[in-house]
Length: 153
Image (cartoon, rainbow, N blue to C red; front, side, top):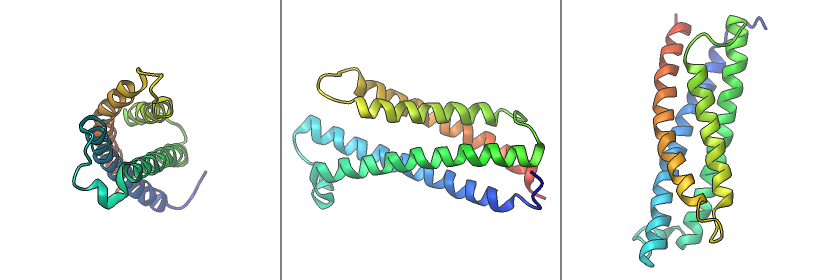
């Protein structure tokens, strides 16, 4: 692929990464609100304004789907952009970091679909993966910043 400039692609990637981090933050907040509502049998002060626990859960699911979509978009952009610019993959640790983040996000999404009273293992797995995902996002952000420096004039 010999396109004149990949700057437009990197702009989409930058927005996607920023929105992924925002979605992660919102998922953490709504997850904590759901935990507090579940364990204290009282709604935190903000949940009545968001439609109660159902509203928070709905927002949590929506943000989760959004984050999965954004991370998959980032994967596609990274592969297309790197192949187009360099002709091959694997020029930095960003590929490994990105693939690990994609795997963690997909595993988190899968574990979320398994959460129920019958599957007591799913909720701790979901929460644990999301804690590890924080480290993954930090790693992929750092390596991504290093990669971005290669493309800037």
